[in-house]
Amino acid sequence: MWSEFKKFAIKGNVVDLAVGVIIGGAFGKIVTSLVEDLIMPVIGLLLGGISFADLQVKVGETAIMYGSFIQTVVDFLIIALSIFFLVKFINRFRKKEEEEAPEPEPAASNEEILLTEIRDLLRQQS
Image 1 (cartoon, helix red, strand yellow):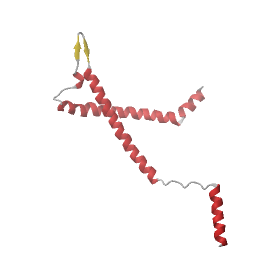
Image 2 (spheres, rainbow, N blue to C red):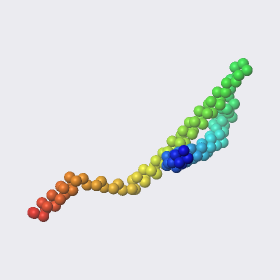
Image 3 (cartoon, rainbow, N blue to C red):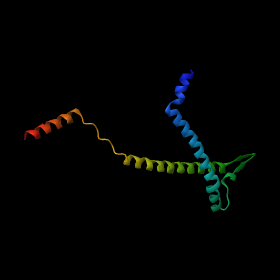
Image 4 (cartoon, rainbow, N blue to C red):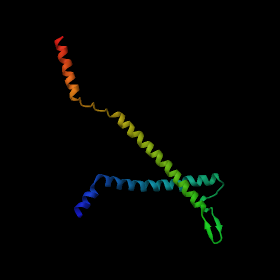
């Protein structure tokens, strides 16, 4: 059982996934700070000091926190936009690397080799 676990844990896909999760968590903290500390205060200022998180409707003893929902939706939209730009930025570098690397010429098929030999023989005869 231990050897099976080692084989599973050392596979490249598992390690790549772990790295992706760790980096994603760190990126999530950066985007959360961006939203909470920079963007939302500016939006609140533009809206006259209104904080989305404080918006609520009281129904009897219960408070419906629709402002918290709005805040979560705004957070999601900003995170999605940030990830979109990050992926677009990374893809730009990948495209440049693909353009720089010349594509190897495909190996000639047996038919092509035979036709080339025939062509060369015909040139020698004439």
